[in-house]
Image (cartoon, rainbow, N blue to C red):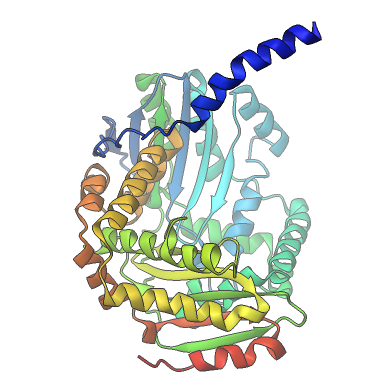
Length: 460
């Protein structure tokens, strides 16, 4: 048997070797296509709550997401993470159901319920069997309108959040991000990323109830359903379970005035073998006509794996493993930042190369082939983002939060592909100006202080 197997292996080896040596040119990629938004039904309840229903796919499941315009932006200076504590307590049951009963009910529907709190909005969401989606909608309505807020669970929730802050404050990237936000946003809620332990310990159930009463209401809410479900039963469940929800207060538009200007903030982390860099500045938000071109520019500069900064300091220099840049959005606000963890002894050289790539793209428009590769990648990622129920809802929530038309989605690929090399250079020269960039460095001060000194001022 062994000799037979050996003979067979020898017999196929030459053919396999020949195949491995052949060079096959892959076929050219197809022309990226615009996204076709699924046909949706939209209506508004008399109390002001918006509803969007999207039949999607063939798998008999549905995703339900209630987005409420309340988040950290609604917190006062002494209320950091009060929105998060409120969300945590909302998970602990309703006036008629305990937390265990909620978990059992959602499990019986084939899913679970999740409450997420962000800077601008809170979401109560889950994916369940399509036939149970109307029942899940009723459950979401109960959670948002009639939270139990059990005082007995508050100490445990506080302790968990205190541990979360302690862990974050022990890591360099959260420290850098916190300082970056403090410099850009100052006393605005976006500038307050973490509460103190004393602040968290001081929160009471009465504060949580007051925060909920002041900020949760139908006028701030938008319900999304995507998937396979019984449309008449779904609409009936929505109207019955949400129709009596009080309108509440309108959304608060707290738009910051972020600061820009060359500034270096050095946070000492003695003995650190790496330095964390956070370099960025305010940029146009999603409502701006230049936003798509800014996203393309970001992808070329540092946002894509094959971007210039990544290729330079990761592939060519070996200074870091996973650098990246990003455009971070709030309501009517955004900033661009390059983030990298670099080896301590090349902190200065890493900054030099980052600014070199920024300056190079400001001076010279990118070659058409490089730009086209980035555009194809962005178009492909966008297609993948819209290939699921949750992805479609995420896109719809984005355009609704930023008050954008549906054409933002349906013409996104077309806009991306229309960006020219000259436009990338214009975006760089107009918005990504080195003299306006804040630089935060977390690392071993005694090793890196002299390395970062040259960047305190901008020299063209």
